[in-house]
Length: 190
Ligand SMILES: [Zn+2]
Image (cartoon, rainbow, N blue to C red):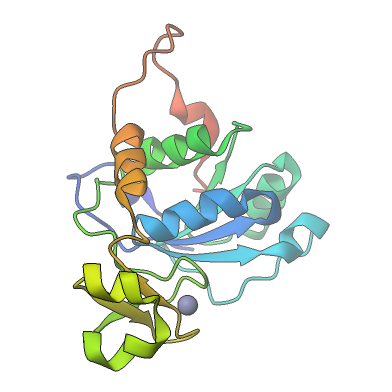
């Protein structure tokens, strides 16, 4: 059984976490993709079945709202980390994950498909001319395409409101409730 103490500290570098989201957390899952992470929706978890779309390792992070799932994962000694998401609203959920794992602010958001989560690749503008609205074609310069679902993205789709939302995630909070104790929300299996 591998221990994962190394994940709790260390410098604030981007780690290639792979997220596995319980069904009610789809919006959180989408945002983790926007932040550049591989993220899988795991609808089976809600029915208590421990089924994952790929093998877990020490960089796996399971996100759930079910206490029972955390107990089960602990019994099974699954590798990686499991985080109990305590908030109802998706902004607070994203913030909880960012703070719990100390996720650095991303430099580039055009990394992953908002639809399916696969990595995007840059495409030559002329090659997709007939696939985007003409005003987009005229006004945008950088286009990316998903290698899996072939959806096309341009900087407008990962738009200014996304960027300002990301800024919001990284602003200090003024809740007046004092600092949150994240240790209570995060489970390490030793
Ligand atoms: Zn896609």
